[in-house]
Every structure is written in C-alpha cells, then in structure tokens.
Image (cartoon, rainbow, N blue to C red; front, side, top):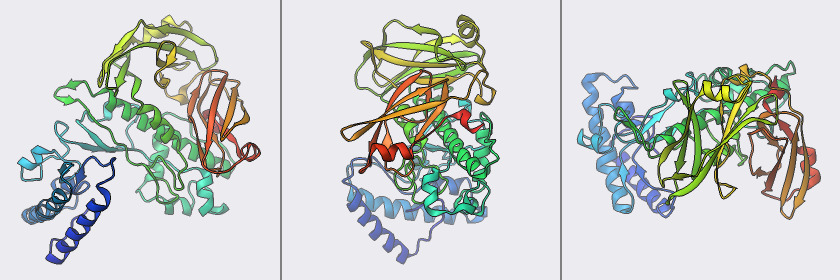
Length: 464
C-alpha cells in the first residue's frame, strides 16, 4: 500500500489509513504464507538516503510524519489485529537498530542488520562479488520479456520489434530494454537474424536466459552465505527475489507471465531453491562446490562432478566423492580444486571449451538438481555446435511425455507449446546427454496433435 513515496498525515488521511489497514489485516492474516508485516516498502531508505532532495532544514518534519504514519498508526492497528506475526516499519530496515535510532536508521542498507534490497543492472551478474553479504536479501532481480505467445495477444505485426513503439510503451522501467541487452551482451552473442520477427523472438528468449542466469547466480550466492561470516558480514538467512507474477503483458522482473505461463526463471527457481543443492563458484582461481541444506536432519550424500567439452556428448572426466555428511540447515564446502588443475586432469580442456556439471546422490538416487558452472562466457565458447533437437510426444493419462534427442551439447534448451496452458517438468536446461525425457502437465484439455503442432524448441546456438 505504501511504497517509494512520501505521504500526508492529516487526520482524514489517518482515519482512512487505519480503516483500510484494519480491513486488510482481517482479510489476509489467515494466509500461512505471510510471515511478517511491513509498514512500507523502501520509505525509510528513501527518506534517510534523501531520494527526493528534501532540504535538510525540513527533514525533521518528514521524520515526524513518518513516525506518525507507520509507527503510531499503522503499527498500532496491525499489532492489535494480528498478534501472531512480527511487524517492521519498512523494508529494507535495520530492525532493532532502526528502532533504537528513532525508527529511521542513518543507513538502512547496513549489511550487518536487518534486510537489504539490491539492484544492479549494468555490473556483471555472473560475478558474485557484486552482491551484498547481507543478513537477509529481501528484494533483488533482473528484467526479462514475456514469451511471444503472451505478447501476441495484445500486439500486432508492426509491434514485433525490440525497438518498436509498443516495446518502449510496455517498458515502465527507465532504460530497461537497453539494460537487458547490455547485461545479456556480457556473456552471450546477441541475436543475428535479419528477419525482424525472428530477431524479436530470439531477443525475448535471450532476455529470459539472462534473467534466469542472473537471478540463479545471485540466489545461490545468498544461499551458500548462510553459514559464513566474512569481515562481520554474511550469515544470510533468507532470499526473496522480485517478483513472482505479472499484471500485464510487458517486460518485468516477474518469473510468471500474465496468464500464468512460466518464464525460464521460474523453472530455474525450482532448482536454486531446492532443499538440498550443490552450488559451484570460483574464487581466486579455485573452483568450489558448496552443499546447501534446508533439511531438518543431517544426511549422507555423494557428490559427482563431471566435465564436458562443448563439442561432445560424452564427458571428458568424472569424479565421485566418498560419502559426505550434509549438516541440517547449513552450507558447507564439499569440493575444491584449482581450475587449472581441473582442466589439466581432464585432458584437452580449456575454460572456453569445457563446462562443469555436478549433483548430489544417495543410494544411487538423485537427491539434488544437477547444477553447472560455466568456466567462461558462452560468447567465447569453443566447440559449441548448433544442436538439432527432436521430440517424440506421447500421452500417459493426463500427462504428456516429451522424449528429446539432441545431436550436440545444448545450453538453455527451451521447450515451448505456444498458448497451450500448462508447464513442463523442467525447462531452460543444459543438455549434455543425447536423450532426455521431459513431462508436460496441461492446465486444461489438450491433445497430442495440438502439442505437436504448437511445439517449438530453442537452444542458445539457434539465435546466432
């Protein structure tokens, strides 16, 4: 209700606010997904970081209004209406430290306290060093475009260009379209097609690849930071990306499109928020794999690490660890090796020609998603060939089976059935084996014939 703005505090407005807040608390407090109430979004930061260029001599007046609105009114109503949840005046905030400073902290973004929001669209999102070692990352994200089948419903042929009036009209984040291309261009070749429609569709695909990979990298950084304190920072105990769903057909931070179709990010989120997850990253030339557990009990697992050349569906080398104990609710180092030694051990391998994948298993059963680590930007990949991917579709009761076969290693394989409502069991994946089976769960009635006519598959090299 209150976000990124300054609000009045006259009595009529206060009466209206108290009535509205009381109603919303009664309406929403039975939802188990709500864990905390916040008085506003970013208004503590806006005031104390002086987003609105307030003259210093008037700042005290604005601080009094802030406390009157969010503490003496909204906080009072919320705590009276719901005694089961905590209340914070703002997000981000320094929590108890903000309270001690009179409800507004001198630096609401202090990484040692409370929560932080973080957005950086121009720095390299594959570089985990840009992310804050915060106690709780409560808002972060990157934009992407929704699928063409979603946009097609509200556009016409003259709109189907990344630089059309339609594209700029639908973009409500300043310079957002350029920022997406800038970020994507750091690691991927931009679409090369001279056909305008094909170029538009390819660009949509690439923005979703970029968004998914950026949010994956950032989320995995926060998850593996839960058990570490570095120079007093870290011990990150939560991560909430912005945002879940769209309210119209437009570029946004959402992982669900208007209408419910899953973007690539939403498929990635099922993996990077898995209860048990191996996370790979590099630090000063050393490749680490952390095991991150949200489980409530310890478990014994085996880590398998494989290195593939981009040019071959057969792994160059594979390493399997002894049994490792994953501690409940912790992030621990499972594996570390200098990248130079890993490449040497795997034979004719360079950063540009190889990719690493890894997973956790127990009793020969997969316990975690298969994760991966790129050793270089994919625009520099050597040996990556155009993959010919085919699918045989069959039906098993209410579920459809897609048996895929590829001629080459394929990054970011994207399966699409147009406007047929439903979701796949996985999507946007790295295909390093010749065959793979994916399930499609329709949300309504459909048929094998309709899916065959609607089906289209894209992987990264298809846009070059």
